Length: 157
Image: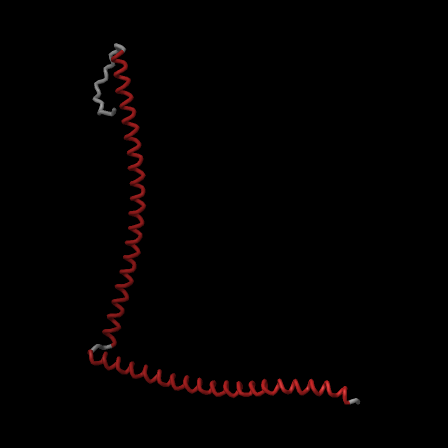
């Protein structure tokens, strides 16, 4: 084997090793940092969980003492809550009934508007017909025909 042929691969191997060493060092450092941070997170989570449980237990104890100092017994509180739930259910039912009635009122209001529109149209048609009768009666009187119409026309002009 000639030395010239070995130089190129040796140079290439040296270049690869020169680039690989920092990458290997970086990966090893990163692995160490991740392990450290993982242990810190586990410690904080465990400590925070213990603190939260202690705080909740303390608050629960304080609430129990407050309720006991008020002189309430569990049966009367349960009875009151049951009554409130029943009243809430009745109120909810009444609210639904009220909303249904409002819907019916809106529907009736819409129908009343339609009836009023028809009434206005009929009154207008009646006025037109009566005005035509009055005009026709006036024409017959001018022609000398007597038309025995004794109706009073209501100023439909």
